[in-house]
Amino acid sequence: MTVHPFIEAEKRAGHSVKRACELLKVSRTAFYARRAARPGSRAVRDAGLAEQIAAHLRGHLYGRDRSTMGSTQKQTSRQD
Image 1 (cartoon, rainbow, N blue to C red):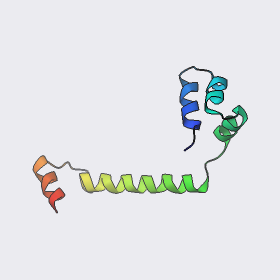
Image 2 (image 1 turned 60 degrees about the vertical axis):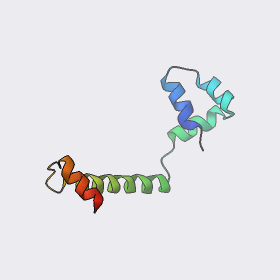
Image 3 (image 1 turned 60 degrees about the horizontal axis):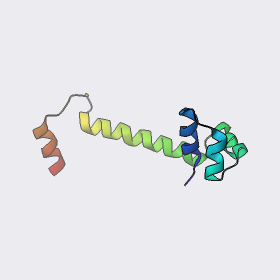
Image 4 (image 1 turned 90 degrees about the vertical axis):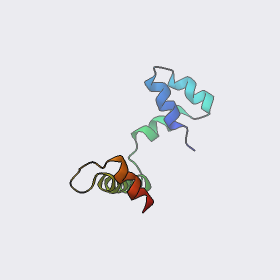
């Protein structure tokens, strides 16, 4: 597990990046290098898959015409 998101959250909250890096035993150089880096191929692929899944779920939940389903229809579709 990477600690960089935690350090980023501390930075956004106005806390010291230096102190967060010290506590989590990460160099500030590594933190800032990772921030500036482009996402890797796995991250890009995962983001694309996440979007495809979200689009599929939106289509499944709302139908192709984006009409909503009532609670009875949702219960029926869950039982299928």
